[in-house]
Image (cartoon, rainbow, N blue to C red; front, side):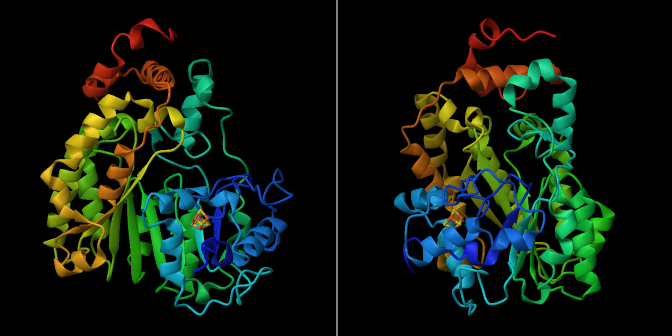
Length: 425
Ligand code: SF4
């Protein structure tokens, strides 16, 4: 494979809102390689797929030139990790795709989608934004004086998916994968409509990925999803117990395991992965989280009605910068990383596919070790004050205190929490 080539811009369309112009969820969201950088995505998605933005990127990739938008993959590869580009190659290189600049591929439309139809959500996670959560948007609008400094602007930009569902599904017979995210996709009318149309057209054997916060095993969604042959659940969980309840407000951790098991039941051939994003708040909870995943993996494996096990895809939060682990003092974060790296629980995870198969899937497929090693060698250090200030702003609005949820982080904040950033109602 050419070093700068990636299948994504030839087969895949990422859709969130009209100003979120990305090649995939991990590419930079500005179009350095295009003259139409500032323009919104056209209302008609055919015009977007054949725009200069896509054509310039495709031309560069076919010429094996560096693509600025793809720094994430270049960095992963430089660190010796299996990159997202590698994942695309693995998924598509045996699929007889005839790549071209004008239409991407021989079917002339994207045949792989990541769809985020809106910001309808039942949670207001601290690291999220009003743009991606209707509940957070409401909270922000009711508390602009306190939460205003955290965000540039609230609200959802114009949705471009609802008016284009027919375009998205126009080549449904050739679609290999649809990823549905939110907001929370299990409660979104657009998600339900897409699933209904696929069921009506009897297109049931595509890879359907649902990224869910696991708080809502709702009946309408479950009835539809149980008709598909290969659904893949991505459980978006950042920790366990009070840590998760503090990050993902208002959530009850006690219900999460039961919801996961209900969602995995009654499906012909489901797969499931945890999407775990390490951030400043979750780092002290890392070992306990891994132990919980290992325990749930055994429970699920022992239940013949469910998936054969769960995987764990780990990443580290890049934005907002204040919530990243690089906002913690380097000695402290390395202490937590070392605790995890030296804990036997890591022996339950492996990124080696053959090793996982040979263990009869007793090992959990995961890149956790590689990510922890990379973070342990990362010297990046941000100012901690934005983390403390943002923590306090949310605590005031939610009538919470971090010491009641994550005392280890409170110990790091020390007196700065009280003395600085006087946020009063
Ligand atoms: S190279 Fe990486 S960032 Fe760029 S489109 Fe492919 S997967 Fe996305």
